[in-house]
Length: 250
Image (tube, rainbow, N blue to C red):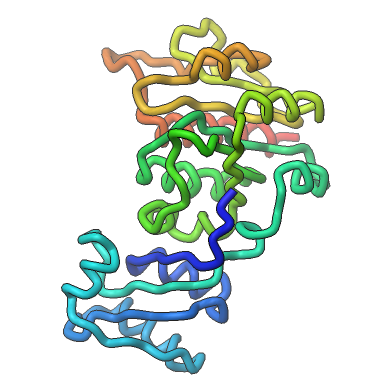
């Protein structure tokens, strides 16, 4: 998983969430000097009340820091959470006091999709997200912005060999449920309670062969129109909330 000591995030909503989570972890704040915005002004006031120093810079400086992304006039650098620094997957699973509810993403490479998946995972109560290190998006500033704080609250484990990790999870009694458009088993007819890991594949490609073969079962989201598949982040939200619906009934 991500072992970087510091992370950078930008955008009003994402920065606001970091302020809410733990403002004391913020190291640096860059603010666009000529921008007028009510939400930005509120964040500035919070920072000043906490004694944090601000660097007032031109828009082009923020553009450079964020590689011309939509920063909305503020960029921060902050200490990564302990979740993102110290935990190992095996220790984390062992520490859970309820049945594990995991999301596994097989080579999702688009940072917007990963960020959206993390946001849905946080909202649905997922304990952790697992991705492979190879050919998969890391925890970038864009991911953090799209995740709107969820990158700071949901542990993201990046594993060297995904299939080996899947087999280890199976040995821990976790049922692996993969998604595949050709499956005859509907998401809505599948039990998603207990210790489970929902596994979704990369954009346009789906699950890799070995990942698919390691799953205990394969399910499909019913598609009634002419579109063949959903965006991975949309599919993730659908699957997670069906699982949440079932788990809340218990």
